[in-house]
Length: 83
Image (tube, rainbow, N blue to C red; front, side, top):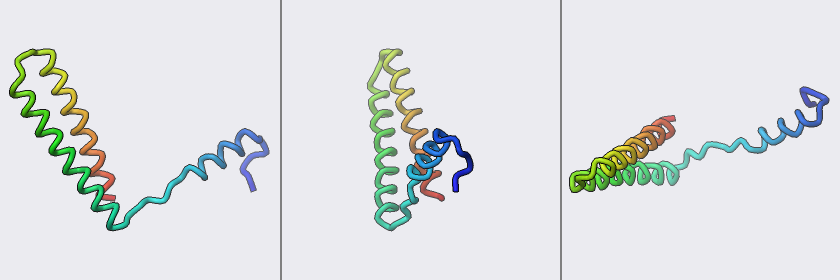
């Protein structure tokens, strides 16, 4: 039974229910997640090395931004992994 007789509400409700995905907590998923997390660390290390070789302020600023974005992805990834 739907919560509303409005057909647009019903379609939206069905889409939300159908789009929910079961969380994958398998050992393979954890292994893949760990490898991805390590790859983010390696990416940050590589950007930091590149930054040390750079002298142009604009490029250094761009590299800092890239580090921030990858670090944010790393933090989000860690949060998902801890669930």
